[in-house]
Length: 201
Image (cartoon, rainbow, N blue to C red; front, top):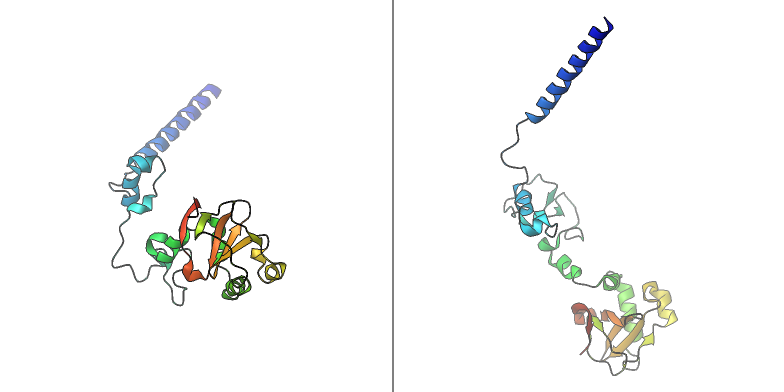
């Protein structure tokens, strides 16, 4: 009797396991993936290597859904801020330019207006130095004399504490001391960005 009970339990377990496996494999597979652009991107050589963002192949919808929460990466709700830092660079010229900045330079770019103006006003009239024209990301040569940011300015603009500066023709350049790379240029309409580590001309 006991062996019959064990055989019955084993047969029941076998049938249950087989039907569960069959149920899992017999589900219909959709013909087209839900995100066909992302799926196609993963079929490319760079997509398979993880070097390409799948959404880069997505087409821009010229008539976005008016009820969509996000349109082109921007929040699409009443009174939402426009052109924030979260909008992808391919939809925002501002964010595309920010992406080209060296990381430490972004700190000085987002300073409040009063602090940026304080840096310019405090340093622009100091004795000019013989400094080649340099933009953000340029490395100043060792022959260029750099001065420490004054302590009274560092109290007003704490982010400038520990940085060096150079002045040339009313242009103030803040410099990261360890690398001698220019991280900010004031006045800002003079700001240009180059790749990190390039030498000044």
